[in-house]
Length: 291
Image (cartoon, rainbow, N blue to C red):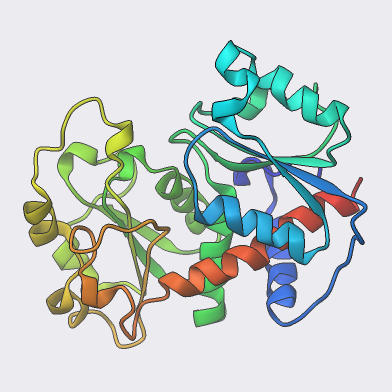
């Protein structure tokens, strides 16, 4: 695999190959590049989980890492994304991990940049590594995907997690629904009433309200949002016995999820974070071993 920027570019077989390798890393598989490879991280938007789990993944593989400090870089002088990436290629980076606010940013790079590109998220478009770690977590829980039901709840319109997961989960045989405030509803994404769907699904996936992507303020207060769409103990008690709770994080406690639900018996949120390292180890290894 040369670049991993959009799951729509990968076959189901390639996706399962990544998940299988991530699972092998979770079970103790070792790969050691002995410091011979260097991964550069270019994050043009804030990130904790994606950035640092990608970096930990590289360190686990014994790769060197470099991090672009946006606030002290030539980006502030007007340097283009292409020229920034081309610089890291020129100084010998073996792959780049990029998060950028522009949807499909990678289209201006593919075919011009000769080192692998791993996407850490593009605008409201795609978040492939997050979706893959979500899939790994679900498969660890249920063994397979076929026939599972998932509801994605929250700011669907502005969420690259929702957009990526909706398509790939359907492709792998899951029934996927969305819910949340009507102002953030996305057409064609199977919108349903939250309280009606909860007892039917195997996975409740919550989303943060992405205020930084909004052009106007949300019509609901935090308290109103939590009352109407937040996952609280009362709603959890209506879930199926073996159903699980997921969230890509960061999460806003007592907004989309009650404080006492974040680490409740059904929650797999921190398991997702743990799996994020294994998935990103698999992604890095996939692009480096094919060089």
